[in-house]
Image (cartoon, rainbow, N blue to C red; front, side, top):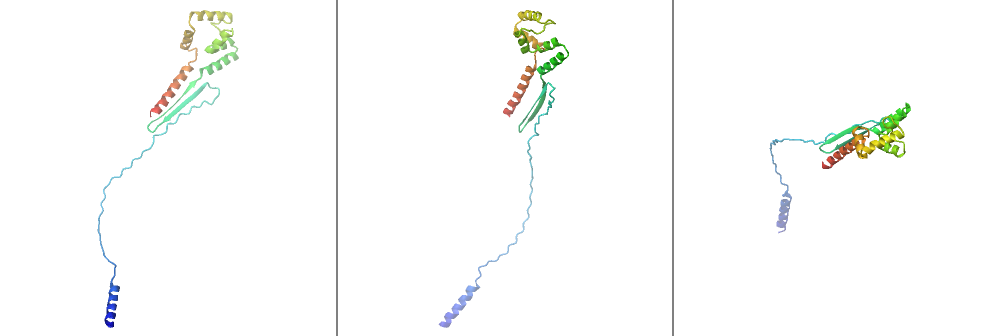
Length: 188
């Protein structure tokens, strides 16, 4: 019995050692891949920048100034610029030139085209020249003319004739244009 048990143990140990848990399998796969496709690239970039033109008015002897502005959105860019002439500055320079040439009455007459100067001269008792008349004769002539027409009508006539500055009109036009651009920007 000892021999039988020893024999069984030997056989059993060989069978345990003979078991191999490794499974080997060879798989050969062949495949062909065919790809048909379309590649499309879309490039989105913003429009070119709206850059205001430069207006150089650095010379202090000029009576002009520049105004420029630009508005840029994702869709639209607008840029504009212009220059304005300061007529009061021109009036002062021309009046000084006339005075320097000895033409004092003409210089005062030119300054009187400004409504503020006209009123100041009348209030000071030294009225502006009227048709070559000065002093009391000019005051009487101005009184006769102003008695015939209303002061507002007088101003309107002076604007129509170009005597008063039209700079106010130009300034209002520029302000309206800038306001319009800002409104357009808000709408976009």
